[in-house]
Length: 479
Length: 38
Image (tube, rainbow over all chains, first blue to last red; front, side, top):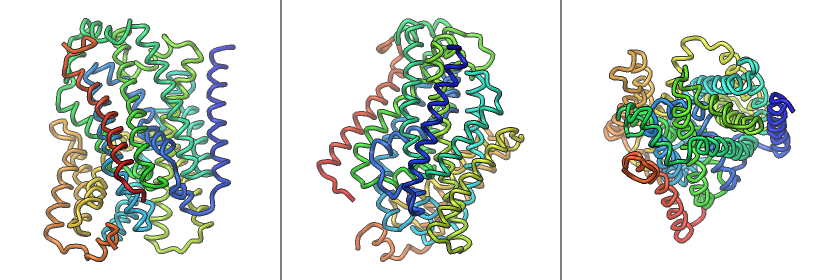
């Protein structure tokens, strides 16, 4: 069988499985709660592994390998902080309260939670707009990553890779909603893990074992073994912080907590998500090995594709490509369902006050999910310069707008409506403004955005009137 | 120099990953013993 035939066979089987999950899930669709949060009845393994799949996109696998190639073993710290903060602590700190509070307030989305928790309809509108617009831009970057993965690993034209990926995702998300997203995410996490483990084992075998990596890398450049090495503390810490703490403010990740069957799911889930998240270190290991074996690549982003082509047999490379595509698709699908909920539930129903039946809500949600996917596709085929700039900031901007309002909403009773609104506006404008003036001192816009919005939420909340006690008692389950 | 010929500071990242897994297991066991389902 030719190499191309193996790729086509593996990927066709994989994509058929995704569409089948979409069709099966669509038969269980009764209400908008089914479409957005799977009737709040999802178990620990599916929730945790779909969280891992949504967390690590194809950009992380290919880009992570590039970072490992460029900066060496200091990148292990990015994986470590991703596991500790982005997985374990996120589940411990946020999981239980997000599930409890969203249930008591009768909300399914982040904009809905902010509006009900703080009695602030304005927060719903700001969050819905930020989420819908910036998540679409974020999706473009994921689609681009998948297109380049097809191009680099299989030789398929970029446009065709983007088109195939997008059509398949739109199909299963529009049909099956959240249930399809988490179940496909569950399988995609396994495919990612198998692909990454295959590549990592082959890479370690090729280089002579794990101990040999540091020895041989030090010969290429001693800075590639030390921490922070050539990256420097500022770059390492800000990157690790953005990719881990930033997740706490990402609505598509928080949706996992809203949808769990009960808080007991979170106990098993925390262990599963931590062990699953540990695979984040594998792309960095592979990138470092690529630096030893191919020290003169034209671009660090070629590290993973070059390694895959040279050390894996055709079937292994095909499985790895399916893993990379899985990583992208799961992140894209999670975002699509979240952005769709922002448009239909938060903007159309709550914002514009349109009254929709359950059937109409599902129909509009499907249309919105498909439209969001197609808009992302249209932009990804030929991304304009502005979109390319915004991509780097889209996830960080959403996180700096939503992170403190969510966290303080869960833990600090003294937080007020005006404090939250000030925090959202300050976080949003500071991050975008910092980007607009060219990110001074090489500091990512997320950092000042986060600091200013923290200052705003604390100071404005202390200066304004406390939320009514009966409302707080209801939210905290004290009556 | 730490295990696997890694500098201790770099090896610390692997300790953090292992520590996260231990923390998750400990929190999970504590939750099963003391928590109530909601």
